[in-house]
Length: 62
Image (cartoon, rainbow, N blue to C red; front, side, top):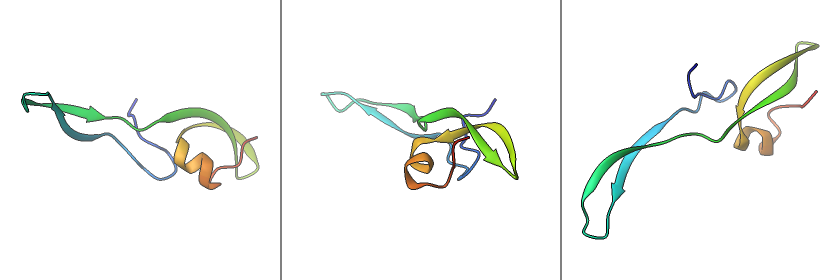
């Protein structure tokens, strides 16, 4: 199962861990996904949605 928002298609991003000595190692920034019951085309479905979509009102909870 991909860590991707089913509304805005937001997925993992990559970056660096940076230590105090400025040593860098690669890391992943994962989206904050929640599994919510939503109304889609008059039916109730469970979707994996990021919290920014929930806050902006792109998803209506069932």
